[in-house]
Structures are given as structure tokens and as C-alpha cells.
Length: 297
Image (cartoon, rainbow, N blue to C red; front, side, top):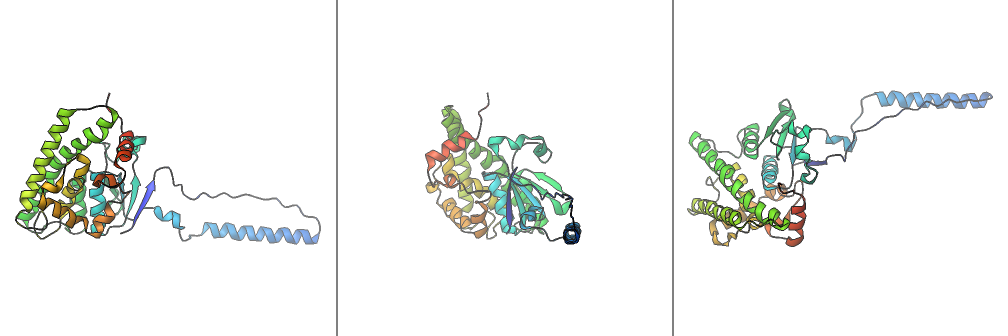
């Protein structure tokens, strides 16, 4: 689906300037020349005042929904969901290095100053933050797609979504933070690393047990928002220094989900981070990633 990426400060709308030229002519030929020029100027002015087809660059204006995001696991949840649902959307890249997530204009969208957040222009510019809430909203926006249909299954799906939001995301996120941000900056916290890596392994084992009955997805035969939410973190286990090889069912599920075209595309928006998946120059990527954050004083 179409996603236009806007980097803040890189785009400005069309500007129009009108200059009045005074023509001084001597002789009949000069007068006719001046009149001809005035006629052409009037024609151009009239044409400019009429409605016109937008230029290609102006098509950045709201296709229906705007996503504010960055290259993180929570951000990828939302881009994957949008691609799976086929929703046209604009992407505004939030630069953590410039602390754009803390700027007053963004806090009007998400008071918590985190990504992702959306503004649904087709619903009165409705603002919504928190990745789990966004996934549920997007499903409802599309008539319940990527969500079970029966009441019992819907509540069970919500259970597994909350499992990710309250467990997998926070634990793996902290394991990543202490190893990929704090440690490269010289703040080594062995107890914190052990605590969060151990808990992350335990949570992945819960998913392993769930998938051990042969079901292809967490909710069974149906691919849902639950898979999107959990996959975004579990698939990037390398970044938390967790080896998925000891979780065969999870490992197969990760590969199965990654094979979906919308997932492949979703993890490239606003940009791809191959290091999250153990690819590319890891040492360089770790240093670059850490440089984008400041440790609390």
C-alpha cells in the first residue's frame, strides 16, 4: 500500500510570488509590444487563480491517515498492520536524536512523547497513541480485519495482545536498552541485563508452548494483530542477545510471518534496520544507535 514518508523540515508547500513590471515604450511598435506583454501577464494571473491539479510533491497532503513513527519495534508493529490492511497513509519520521518526540506540537498528538501515534483524517483528525491501541483501532476501522470474529476468541486475542504490551515488549525492550544503548555508552549493568534477558526468555517460552500444538499462528489458523504485535519484538530477539534456536516452534513462526509481503514491506518503513535481525555491520550499528539516545543523569 502507498506510504509517503515525510522527514520533518524537508518539505514546504508551493509559494507564489507576483511581480509587477512597468513597461515604458516609445513609438507604436514599443506600445504594441508592451500591450502584448500585459495581456500575457493577465492570462497567467487568471490561470494561477483557477483551481489546478496538484503537483506530485503536493500529494503529500493527507491521504486519510498520518503515522508518526521511527525505526523501532513498536513502530514496525503499526507499519506492518497498515500494510496488511491496505490503508493509504503518510509517514512522518520522528527523529529521536533531535528529540522531536518531546516537541510541543508532537505532545499535542501523544502527551506521552513516544512513538507510534496516528491522526485519522477520515475520522475528524482523531489522534491515537500506544501501539496496541492503534492495532485494535485499525482493525475496527477496517471492519474487524486481522481480529477474531467470535466474542470468546476476541477476548482471548486481547489477552495475548496485552501479554505482549505488558510483558514481551517491556522486558525485551529493557534487555535491548541495557545492552544496545547503556552498555556502549559505558554504563554496564550486569544485574539489569541478566534480569531482563532471563524474563524475555521466559516469555518467549510461553509463546513456544502456545505454538507447540502445531498451530501456525498464535490464535490458530488465522493471522491476527496478536501475531504482528508479538512478532515485532520476538523476531528482533538478536538485538536483545537472545538465541531463538532453542525455541523451534517460535523460530518457525518467526520465519512464517516474515514471509508475508506486508511484513517484509512494513519493516522497511520509515527505514530498514537489518541489525535488529542480526544482519549487517552490527558493531557500527550499535554505536550509531546508542548515539541517538542520551542516558538519564
